[in-house]
Image 1 (cartoon, rainbow, N blue to C red):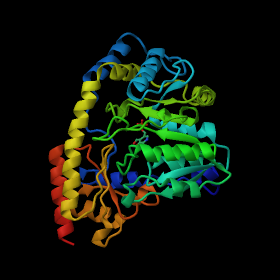
Image 2: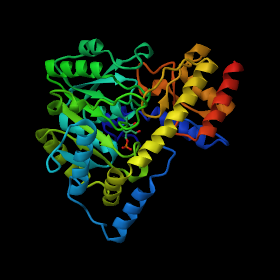
Image 3: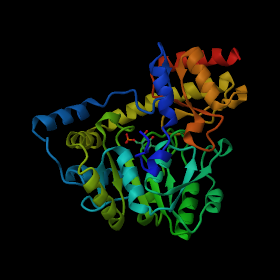
Image 4: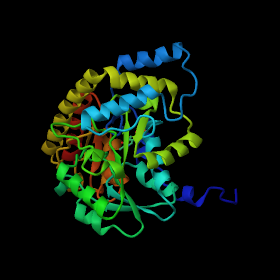
Length: 386
Ligand SMILES: Cc1ncc(COP(=O)(O)O)c(C=O)c1O
């Protein structure tokens, strides 16, 4: 094929650094994977039953573009109850195909070619790709372990140019597990106001916080009008395979978002909408139970890594630990590669998540407790053998 039929944008799109390791791990025996960013729990039974019931009742059709109204109402009530911020179910909420679609819609709705998005890194692997596909430019601002991987507002401000349109935040964070404190969030809010920026706040892990508050960005004074809030069910409700999430924004912005959704997706899966509604209505006990178990594992892995001699800051959210591995004299890619081949433990090199991730690896503790113990043992042996 002499001609490259792919667009310039797609040609520039790099494959995710996460996949590469999964593909290698899949060919090996007895691998313990700390690489996966999804709950090991199955979806709560009431959610599964609600999905099945919807199918049995022949809810097998398209829904309203924005999603079934009871779900949108439940999302509004949920946000009101937890964070004191509300959205009009008719005009300010769209049920999406996961947080992934919500992110794509937000970026597509905001960016003209050449518009810049401030991106604290290390960050979720999709962000740069989605910005690139919209013709936008990611302006990466690395955060550091000394600051518990919370971005420094002064450094963010230095990166602002006349083309900056938005800041993309993700707390609790994938890959670091960082949770930003209220003061930092307020300062970032001031920046957004001063430079008239939109904040896209990906709060997909909002319920997974350990002993600290989750600050909902839209709930900060004056921020609702300049925030696009992304939420989901994949992580909090262990529903990754259902493909359901949501996006909330002030009316004018949501109108643009809803138009894209209408043309590209039409509606989120009907069955998943009924499942998510059940999750919001009756599954708080399940969320709390999963949270307690993640917390137990979090303590195990953070203590374990520090004991092994891989300095690890205490993650306060999501289900990731981010140990520093360059203290072994290896870079993160080499560390992950050798650990996989020599001890059959899969972790993700931090550099896959952008600047600031080099020298670290991401380890998910959404894995059974005994598997984590075994993985820590193997990592310990590996580090000792160096
Ligand atoms: C930070 C973050 N945002 C969004 C997503 C997308 O999740 P989903 O599309 O399953 O809702 C993920 C998944 O890993 C994530 O880690």
